[in-house]
Image (tube, rainbow, N blue to C red):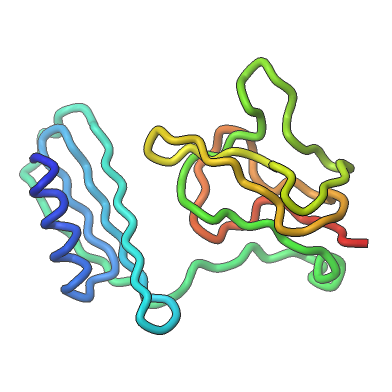
Length: 161
């Protein structure tokens, strides 16, 4: 499957109204998720994964998702309600360090200002610095280093006081 076929498949799925399509072929797996949020805005997320040859017939499965991703449930919601949340602006792999031999950007107890880099997220071989939009003290780190993150997933809790 070449890049044009993948692009045409993405366009087709976006126009069809399906929210998720998974395609598995011999050595490739493709998952396309579409969401519509806000007025007139549409987002498409595509994951392409090279895999070992699969001994199955090629198949296409569609599974509509009617609900939004659930937020993590905290046992004491009133305790965390006073904190601000830094969320992931993109899908990718989160790294808490600029490189493996460097220290982490922020830790629990670190004081941050608006514009400070709190982590990097790798998306499609590009490393995107994630800057804080708030000032305060890091209270909790919600994501482990080198772990995948979704769009709008909470990453850090910040005490603004």
